[in-house]
Amino acid sequence: MSKEQFQTIISQTIKQFPDYFLEKLKNVAIVVDDEPSDFQKNQVGYQGKGCLLGLYEGIPQLKRGVYNKAIPDKISLFQKNIENFAGGDEKIIKQVVFDTLWHEIAHHFGFEEEEIQKMKRNKS
Image 1 (tube, rainbow, N blue to C red):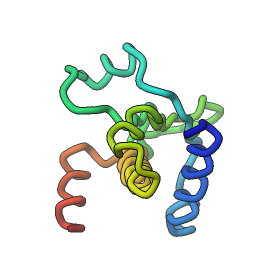
Image 2: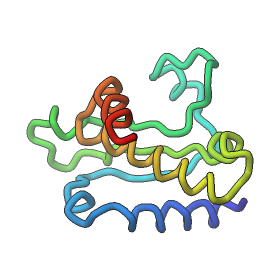
Image 3: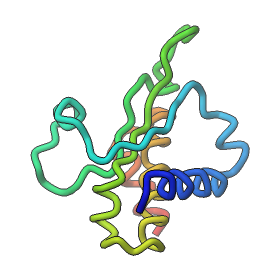
């Protein structure tokens, strides 16, 4: 899938989130990379187990003080990893993008990994 097609999926996915939720996103950019850099892997202590699908980099909203004129936080979605994880199936890619974006936005709002996993379990 081309990067443009993948970005279209992201744009369509974002529209699925409620407006009141999206209005609270502050100073965050969503970018597409093929796969994580070595620096990004090191940031999260990636040991080569599993597959890193997305990454939030920034200061979560709950931990911000005065936050004027700061560079945007960043949510990276890793296209090749997502496509491989989904087996190239577009329907599954869309679901993985939704789940990954939701997960990384939760980090932006200040949720820790354990809290996000608990929310996912309760959602099922």
